[in-house]
Length: 80
Image 1 (cartoon, helix red, strand yellow):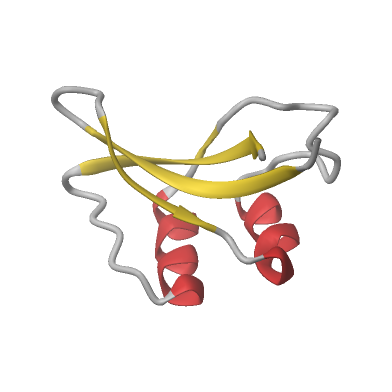
Image 2: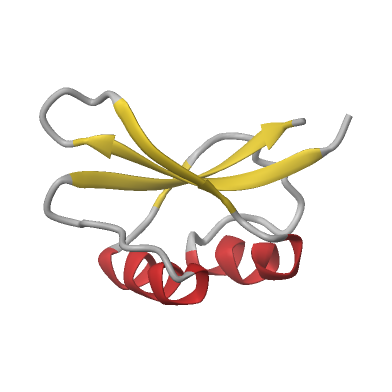
């Protein structure tokens, strides 16, 4: 079992997952830092809410538009 990370956008009104993108392995450490997550995903395997500044930084790093008006964003470790 291995863990990959993704950013997940949940609609603010329906709370339904509508957007997600995998985070490349070389950006995972920075993404976890931005989310204030422990270095080891096994220590804290849950989702981490992302602040506005973290969303803006990850959006730039990933080259993805990440609307903060429409979605609540989280960093999620996922078993692959």
